[in-house]
Length: 319
Figure 1: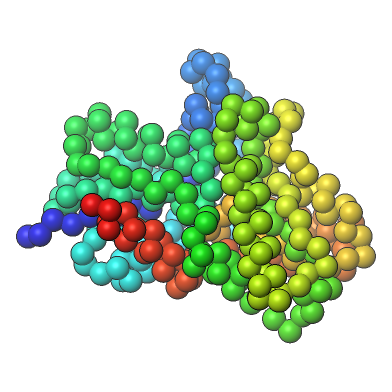
Figure 2: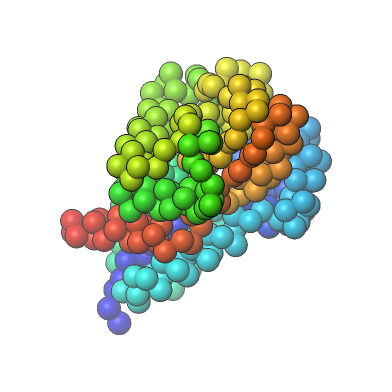
């Protein structure tokens, strides 16, 4: 049997049930890339955060059907990519904080005829808190399990033209039969503590670059909005985070119409399906925003599948 490349689509994961919420929170906040402190203090802080956030998080996932949508959407993307590329590769998903973990994936790969593993974190822009965390954890697990197949990485893909065209397609779809010039377009990105950026994390720079790329593409297509903004969501804790926050940005939008695209996400999750679609919608109504829309992210859209295929084939062509 001919050996093939394994494509591992990596994501943060999410609770597969209400009973997995605490596990998800503990694993996430015990990640040294998330809380940069000694492991004993981090374990304590992670426990406290889990204690105080578990109940509210469970309510969110109850609203979303008792689990995070991220697992199902990622698995559908796996199937779509496998179908698109064909049987010359083996596509599988891996999650950082909930099953399937790296160890689970490596056990599966041992039973396949694999020559090399291509790690594809589903984060368009690079950050130590997401991309590096996922890749390093997989590498460490492979060493522990003595899995010695060559590993290569795709660490960012936000500059891929097909990918950005897919985003524009989603925005256009949401604005169907609407006059875009009447709307403020907000690209909302998941925030990070300023301290992480000061340590050299390129995330903010890459987010801003991605927004610039999309602005230029929209101009070329003659798609005009009243204004285009970048804002950050999902702040946790008292420390300084990237600004402007989405909340502060929306406060300036009284009597205006708003459409949001979640630029840091490619798979729908609690931040898109609840935080943006429910919580901020309520805030928008209180502010007096005339119309508030949130675009769906790409999930398994054909153009996104094609963009990932392009990135993977570019890696394969180098070897």
